[in-house]
Amino acid sequence: MSFIPVNTPSLRGNEKQYLCDCIDSGWISSEGPFVTQLEEIACGVFQTSHAIAVSSGTAALDIAIDSLGLSVGDEVILPSFTIISCIHQIIRSGLKPVLIDSDPVTWNINHTLIAEKITSRTRAIMVVHTYGLPVDLDPILHLCNKHGLYLIEDTAELIGHTYKGKPCGSFGDISILSFYPNKHVTTGEGGMILTSNASLANTCRSLRNLCFDNTARFVHRRLGWNYRLSNLHAAVGVAQFELLQETLAIKRKIGMTYSSSLKQINKLQIPLDCTQYASNIYWVFGILIDPTLGSASDFILKYRELGIGTRPFFCPMHRQPVLKSLGLFPSEEYPVADYLYAQGLYLPSGVGLTEDQLSHVIEITLNLFS
Image (tube, rainbow, N blue to C red):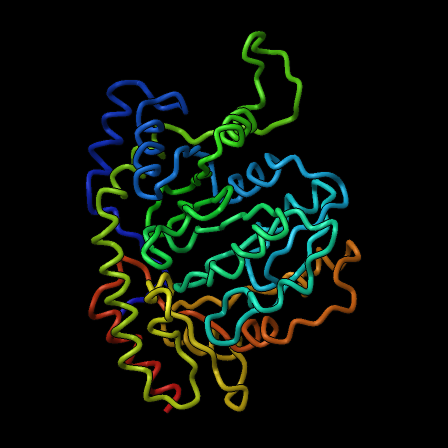
């Protein structure tokens, strides 16, 4: 069997037709009609009043954080175990990132550790739904309400999932999506900001478009970005949203097949099938390897030698060389995040994964850990 990549996207719907529509009409820039259509679809799916399409999930985070108007020295709480995009604009804005360790079972931010980190300078909590299970939001929403904090909700990995029956992405004062090829909806590169706050939405729209003045176009009173999404990218996203429920069913089937096949391996921790507030959507299928067998990096090499692509878990924020070089988190310890990074990897889980490929990965995994 040929090499199995960790992610294979599936462009099985109307993507080609809609791209041809863009080319035939000449609408290829960010002013094309598919951008508006994509935003309208997102508002419906996520039950928010406003959706602002942007060029990536990172762009969405940058704009979302900047739109809140926080002051230098204000604190933003976020998990240590997440992708580095989450912290970029916090640092660039002169804000102070305050890290929280992970829950060892769900791998999400450990909400029981947040209250003790809230100070008079805390202004926002960022939650990042990680790998397949949503964050337990109710306790965090309670803290936000109690202390008057913004909730920033990163829903990049859980497009289409719910928390207690309500869409993930609808809970934040401001929420973000990523449409990278490994997400449930892809535009190739792209992202989205979601909010039901009209003032924040207007600010975000301005920030994504260089903050052009409404009355004097080339006069700028604030620094923004060119983070617009093109009509071409949006066309692909519209086609992808049309197949979202089918995509989620495929992802769950892949995850449940892995789970039923690998649960017999004693020295692997596999994802929870469900919690009290949500089932696992299996954005990816992660495994944690018992340290007595070696590290995740050891097994990533073994899988590659056997023709299977995998990915390591996130390197925690407090371990990132670029952040340490800035003097951040000099003596802070987050043991669960460290363990996840050292022992975690995820297996091929893309929507385009075939049944034969899935069976082959399972067979290899059983052989490696038996």
